[in-house]
Length: 288
Image 1 (spheres, helix red, strand yellow):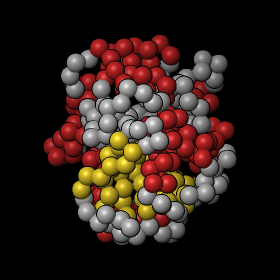
Image 2: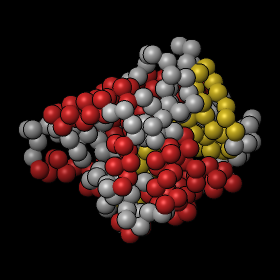
Image 3: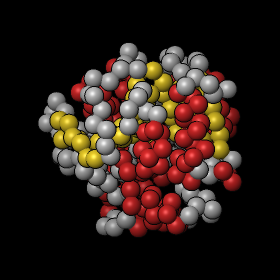
């Protein structure tokens, strides 16, 4: 049974990590995973609005926010196992899984390890198939697969994050309009900033390097349950890569936010009401 409140809850993984999650509402289960380094509170507007029709759960991955700061398990495959154990712990079935960027990568790893039996639908926000550029690819392949970095830039980024002693990196990320449009309100920008810093910079750099080594192209072709891909015209994740991915995933839908609709990296914050309407329509099976 759902807890029925917007309170803090915990469960213990098989390797003794105490993970925090938020649980609100009743109905079909919607489990949400934030991007790397962000807390479950980034889904504030989804917890408030979608919980009127669904049981909305947001999980803080190990080491994040109020989840235990263990010294082990900081890789995508382990995060995916945590997600599987979380779903089994709550005895959830017919789950809709939503992942934002890195959260979507965790879901992809979940699918590789545990399959689709407990799931009903998938929602990937701003997730391309391959984050790292292969120097042998053509320009068309780069547009299709959506890589954003080469190996040298990834090494520099991880080194910068690891050596940083404050949250200036995320603040610069937000203030530079890379992640949010210039129409984002103070409240919206503040939500992103306050929800960041959920993981130590040292662990962010370790996991980020691991995440850039992943390649989900073959997995996309194996997905058969209804899948919604969401991106933005102005996002640093090329929306062309989501169009390509939608052609690989059987029974998939795609929605691209225009830039003036909040179509950067956080459409679920900048245009929450419209975003939530799209999610609801998709889960109900009516999205065209």
